[in-house]
Length: 394
Image (cartoon, rainbow, N blue to C red; front, side):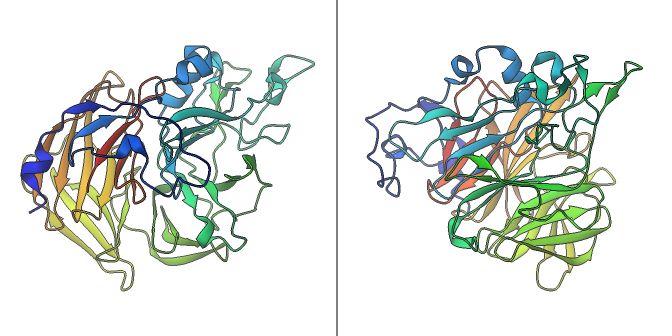
């Protein structure tokens, strides 16, 4: 039953670094991953170097502001254009792209692109912000934003041209870089929009390389199917599917109920979209069948209790143990003050796996935890200036 004994103790172990793997050998298990006990958090060596790269805390604040990661096919993690929500006072114009390189014996953190010059968002003649603040700056570069759960990969094997990518399937609730207008009020630009980043070239592609969602409305949840790479976007009026090979959106059905910035995952065993929702002070496991469209709810039983809304939580489907890992937290005065990990069975049974290792995410968990089939576990990037964590699931 979910290997409860082996998975209950979530202590953190340190991992020693080794020599770098030669090019072309990343398909094998990295040495830092070898021998890690199932169900025990490990700190990934070499992934706490971001502060020295970013030079000041302003950059880190951008990343910590409700920004999730995306994983490529090898298990490398990416923070792309993290920021948004009036980040200019601490460097919002420094739109950056970061890779946490994990598919190597010696993990590293790399800046993939240079930050945009100040002129990208300021009028050079007046030194005042240019309005609107997104989705792209006047120089054409992609604007920073809250990425939430929106960073989703396109594997080379699913791409029509064989090129690996990372998409920002941006929600209109994901606030782009914000600035103060002439009245001193913050001004944000939002909209349903998809940006594409070439992982092999470290370049952003032209707008509409992948089409925007036809429904120009608020997204509430986003998930990716690892079987074919399809991306599901739940908007306020409908559930949509992006075929990443043909680069076309298809409307599947009417909107699913009760999803508002909720985490959502594809359960590949049951061919269903999964989320945790709260209805009348009770938590339920929501399942939407991808073939029939039928939506069912199963009451969640056990130590996981409702607390506020379920916005900003983390959810990962663990195919190795056929369970859902739910990253819960509480927020006090806008900051996370408590964080716990739970395992939820497909029947709604809950096992408490203990507190998440500190330091916790500052504002919300969002899309910071992601499952990697290549690495056999969950990659978790809680903050910019701390080590990435890894939870082996097999």
